Amino acid sequence: MEQIVTPEDIPADIREEYEELLLGSVDVLPEGELLHQLVRARTEDRPLRVKLGVDPTAPDIHLGHTVVLRKLAQFQKFGHTAVLIIGDYTSKVGDPSGRSKSRPRLSDDQITANASTYVEQAAKVLDMDRAELTYNGNWLAPLRMDEVLTLSATVTVARMLERDDFSRRYLANEPISMLEFMYPLLQGYDSVAVRADVELGGTDQKFNLLMGRPIMEAYGLVPQSILTVPLLVGTDGEQKMSKSYGNYIGVCDPPEEMFGKVMSIPDVLMVDYWSLLTGAAKREVDEVEHRLQEGAYHPAEAKRDLAEKLVTLYYSAEAARDARAHFDRVFKEKDKPAEIPETALPAEAVVEGRVWLPRLLTSTGLASSNGEARRLIEQGGVRVDDVTVQDAKAEMAPEALRGVVVQVGKRKFLRIR
RNA sequence: GGGGGGGUGCCCGAGUGGCCAAAGGGAGCAGACUGUAAAUCUGUCGGCGCAGCCUACGGAGGUUCAAAUCCUCCCCCCCCCA
Image (cartoon, rainbow, N blue to C red):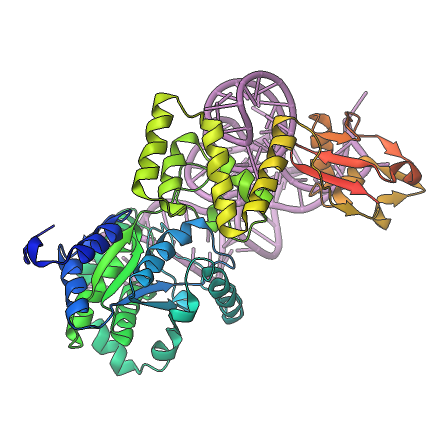
């Protein structure tokens, strides 16, 4: 960091605060600025206004979202003000960040629904009682055309095209709409509206975050500093965690599913998850990494511990222990789970007094079509009371199904009532 | 406004009259193995009670015994020039 103020002038506790805020962050720009702000906040006795804008594009939030929320919560912990902006308006524009194509625009209903669950779920990480919660539609919706024009005059097209995802798409002959160009401007305007001192975001937000600075200046404000956090890689180990890639772990996933999904991440991701998601201190993370490298800590065991930690964070220690027991039982010992969901035999499964197995699977939701059900059976993926069925033509009498457990693959179980 | 290039299954992408429910890859699903729903290997991957049939290659018509492939019109995207 640049030493504009000499380290000796800075109280030790602020230096500590700064160090902790740097932990798990990627870019902190402009260099040294945040430290100044922390000092200024202290001397002027004015907490920093730390902005996080989120677009409610998905109905549920996942662990990837919690990385930046944790960082915001950390600022809160140090007495600063968390300003959480729900991008009800910007989500109608669609953030082009990291995208190779335009996002679909969402409807108002979807946005409202998503926003309310977002806030509810963010509360699992953030202290919402002490946070400022706003919606950017409050100030973006009433903007007049001349105000929009004033705003768009602050940025040049060349500057826009410097941006990685835009230039890539431009070179690849892929469409970029003017609408998408507007997005960074609107996000910058949010910073003006809430008079942000610091804005947080994922590394893919760097451009948008930086864009806020000249815009704030143009509106006569002190430009914000920015802090980015890494993007969490999803369970596939390849792409960033995202609902649309289907590689996410939702904070509202039931404990067993959360546990199982954590177990499905590639081994190499374990340490990242540990440091970004559990709130563990650096020393603990280093130790885990070290012991794994030495072979003193079995990877499967480490992953179980990680999964248990995460479930504890979002549920409870008991729920986490149960989830672990469930996992070991079902996947390690290949036994049936302690609790199996039950369902009545659907009426449409019975034809002429007989139940054809594929139809049973389809009607109970264990398979999406009879064709898929057939395939599952032919591949040996279907068990009825622990007996693998391989005849796709199998039929049984409805009475014979009472209390029977149908298993599809390794993790779908259903008891017929 | 003019000229050119494109739109294929969940995604990427091959296919330019029959051998095409459509190569190849990815994702997904199943099986084997294992240290786990890791990794690896194998299989599968539109629907239908399925050795057969139905629906599908931007949309609508047409030519043909036969169309993703040819023709007409329409919609959408990209590039170049203005």
